[in-house]
Image 1: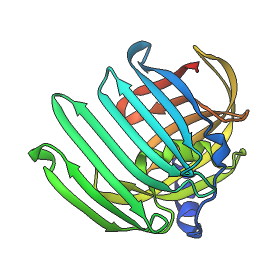
Image 2 (image 1 turned 45 degrees about the horizontal axis):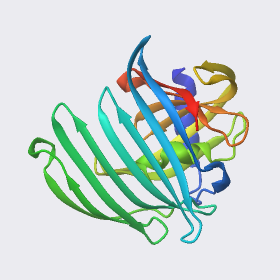
Image 3 (image 1 turned 30 degrees about the horizontal axis):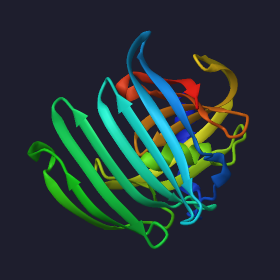
Length: 233
């Protein structure tokens, strides 16, 4: 495994900085409901709602998580092949601490402005005005963008990201390792397994091989949490 990760690190570092292209139609209007598990214990739930404003040419993605912690992330994306992040608004409540991020992306993702409000021990209030690589996505847009990428076993995916929580830029990277069957409360699916990283944080995604390539299962090893699809509405 270490040898594979070392190879992938070198491969990703050598990739050109061309702006990624995505399949916007994959993000079809619907609501997906998930349960959160730690081991076999259910510790919360999540709801992902996707909607479109055809007049404005934008897609809204809202993810709400409750239970283990409370979080609502609202992302506005441009409804074209760039799926460029335009607006990001995230509110997190955990251990009686409140965090809020309001960001606007401009110039094809090459600039982010906004504000962050966090408890004093996490830096307190901060204004954001940062220059970014072209095509930078907000960290909360990463999972939808992986889903909307061209998917095939062995393919590598990479694009720049901005993480307001850590106030840092980085890369979203994924390797489509294999096909695997996955069974969740919503049913059984043949999935692409993505071994992914957002910055240094590892993420495992099982994405349905069938259009619209919903995320069937998501594992966050650092939190010991698994998201399993329960229903599609």
